[in-house]
Length: 501
Ligand code: GDG
Image (tube, rainbow, N blue to C red; front, side, top):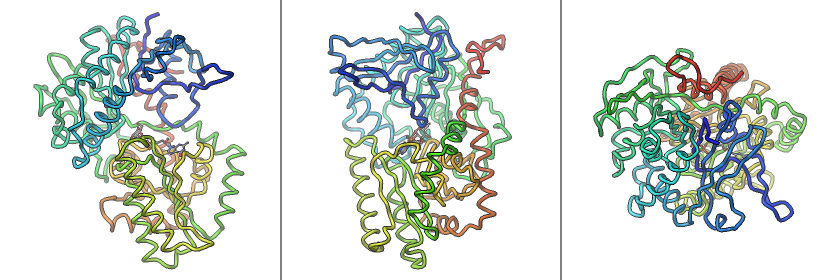
């Protein structure tokens, strides 16, 4: 049956678990990550579909079904699983996406690696995603494509299915023209994105950058501009931008430009934060820490963009300059590698381990270990307990599309206490200006921010946390979802996909 909504996202929307020698599909209950939110849209349509990839060796199994029907708490939907060979995955994902696109998107020109890119393979894989989406979409359906590794899908899909409505959301930053135009495939990528009806970003700055890039490469027509939602606080950080482009004209078509920050599932985190197990867990962590020892928490994937090394170096300087803090502060640095096989991430993990080891070697004692470096994923319920205990949440990426950890921290602080120190180069800083905002490229800024956070009086902590919590609650995942859906209104103003009640 043709689908009204097709979501194209490289990851599968469920977990495959072996039970009694059989593979069963289990709902992925992880609240973090975008998958559950996207699946939430399936509850609004008669029929939804998802397109993801799967290793070809699994597909070689005679029982393999390319399209499977899933029924879970999100409704009924089908999943098309595109078999990709290990070489295709390595080429399209690990090399082209992670070694060429990722550094450019995050403005790390020096890490950009052009040489191993096999562009025909990237095209071929994107074509396969587009073909699968075209096969699933009902006439006039909405096809929602996610992230840069599928940049060419909109262009191919528009050719295959001129009738469908295409939306594309970027989860990463979108850089300036000087940076983006380093990519030799820049025109092809932008031409494909301009085949969309809507191109979405987290914050206005990325949308502005995209429009500049498009205008630098192609005949892109007048841009209408409007003031952003006045409830948002846009001033005061490196990424803030008060004006947002609304649409661009290209080849006679108008393409909407959306800027809408992804939020977190507030209700889910409130429920987790207030349940008995979490409370007990948090109390045990606090007891182990001791009353006069402060916990600084840092959580992020192991990635050079997340600024882990720079942060640990700042902590080292803090301990050098403030002997009075010895034994009185601990840093829990959670750095989990998602791409362990990649050299860039192995290198960064090695550097993190080296600095953490040096700090513990220089300052630690039998009773006190300044840095607890955690390199395996912490279960989310435990993470919420750590959020509740952490006196400071220290989130200092060098570049980050949004950053959900800082929002999760505020959501978990049902006690209204705690300090968030946040890099101005995280998209979240645009909304969360009541955090202690810091510039991770400056030693002075990093060092004063962490000292300020540790010394902050309770009244100020509570005032700032109140504002953070209000913002995070108001612009949660539901607000983002509604905003995204609002672009799919019919000409007469009716929503093609019914609004959530
Ligand atoms: C991309 C963009 C954008 C981390 N460690 C553990 C753990 N996590 C969870 C956090 C959070 C998620 O991972 C990380 O989310 P981020 O938003 O920080 O980062 P990316 O993975 O880089 O995501 C980013 C996002 O897309 C959404 O558009 O915000 O800028 O780069 O939810 O809680 N979760 C558990 N254990 C861990 O050890 N359970």
